[in-house]
Length: 283
Image (cartoon, rainbow, N blue to C red; front, top):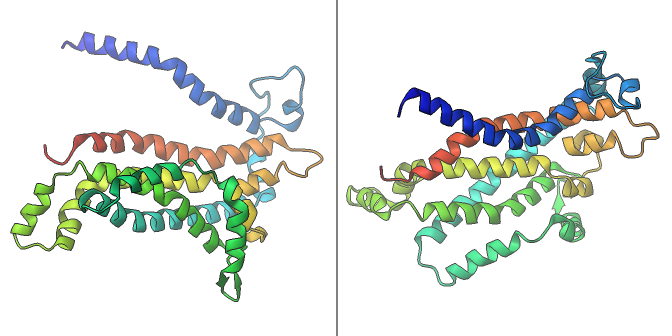
C-alpha cells in the first residue's frame, strides 16, 4: 500500500471520527471556558462561549474553597487501596473459575453478572447499618476511609472476577503444564508464567476499578462526615450544595481538575491495554 493511500485512509478515518471526537471533547471545552471566566461573564446574557478576560485566579480560589489538595489525596488513597484490595481477591478467584473444574462454575459466573445490576443507591442503607455495626479503632467503620475502601472493593470484585476469568480462560493450559514438567510448582507457574501473560487484563481491570472508585459519590456521602476525610466528588458537590450564590467558575475549575487527570491517563493507556488484550498468549 502506497504512502498516499495510507494518508488518504487516515484522513477518512479522522473525518469519520471527528463528530464523535467533538462530542467527547465538548464538555471539557465548556468546563475550561467557564473556569477561565470572571463571575460576571459566567452570568452574562446572552452567554459568551469564550472569556474576554482570563481569570486564572479561579483555580487558586477554588483550591482554597474546596480544600482540593486534601480531597484529591483522600480520593487517590481510597481509589488505589480499593483497587489493590479488589485485585487481591479477584485474581485468585478468577484463576479458580478459569482453571479449576468447580461444580456450579457457570452458575457462579451468571451470578457475577446479576450482581452488576445492583446500584449502590439500593444498598446504601444496609451498607451504612453494616458499617455502623462493625467495631473499628474504638468506634465503627462509619466516617472512616477504611470503611469506604472495603465497600468500594466489594462492589468491584464481581466485575473484576468476571472480566479476568474471561481473559484467563484464553491463556493455553499448555504453558503451565510445560512449566510443571520443568519442575515448577503450580504457584511458581502462576507467578512466573501465568500472571505475566495476564498482565494486560489485570491492568485494564485495575484502571476500570480505579476510575469507578474515583468517581463514586453515594457511598462516600453516606459514610464520611469529617471534612478532612471527604473525597473529591464530595468537595466538588459542596461547592454547589447549600450555597445561596454558586461560583460556577470555581465549580467548573474543580470539576475540570478532578476529571482531566483520570481522563488523560485512561486515554493514553487504553490503546496499549486493549491491544494487549487482543494479542493472546501464543504468538
